[in-house]
Length: 193
Image (cartoon, rainbow, N blue to C red):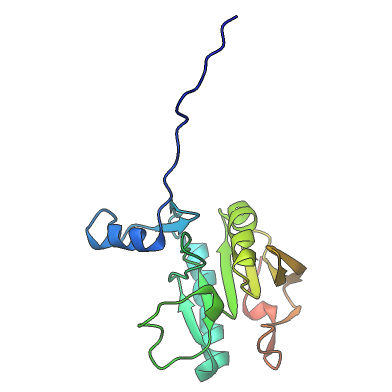
């Protein structure tokens, strides 16, 4: 039996965040394209359905109302995790800044909380995005599972893994760890089943 020797294995070229942005500037990526950059690869995002949109609106409205000028609610906008990753989480809670991050953009070190609303993307959010957020040391991530109507809360990232996790169901109390003085009934965030 003869063996086939592979001389030149195919290599993937990973993009940087700057290259990704230049692709948008020159028209390679259309402004309305739903894409994000993870580990140097451009990934297409799922279309936003009605259920997903309603959860994002409900949660972001609550955050805006409760936090007022204490935080910026960043909705479906990019966050630079590192030189090769710039996802677009559904909701991000940020420290207030007069320039609203126009000069620098938002990086992982700016973030209090990331919220991913998951209907069709639950497994991807858990296995792909969550570890990247932990590696970037984002202190807290909520994954809102719209199918089970609950919130998975992840906190305390150490060496790329969240050390604390809990499940919050309708009627349970929840607070952002950066603002323990603002706790609420999770029924305000979750719809009736």
